Length: 118
Image (cartoon, rainbow, N blue to C red):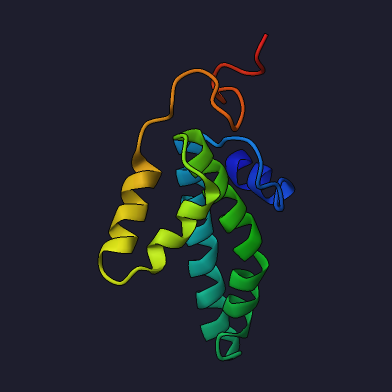
C-alpha cells in the first residue's frame, strides 16, 4: 500500500527514476481500487461516475510514474507515447515497463535501490 500512496504523494513529479516494483505495485493497487469503485458504482447505481472520477483523479500520477519508470531504464519520458502506435505500440510499452533497471546512475538520477549518489 505504501507504493501506491508514495506514487500519489509524488503525483506530478516527472523527474527521477522509479523501480519496477514501485510501478507494478501501484498498478496492482490501482486495479483493485478501480474494481472496488466499479462495484460501488453498480451497488449505488451511479452509472460509472465514481469509476470515471477515480480514473481521472489518478491519471496524472499514473503517467508520472510511467515516465519515471522509463527513466529507470534509461529512456526518455517521450517513449510513453509509443503505446499509441496501433498494435505493436502497447506491446512495446509493456516490454519497456518490465525491463530491468539500468544499473548505476543515468542522466535521470541515481539508481533507486542504491540511493543518492555519493
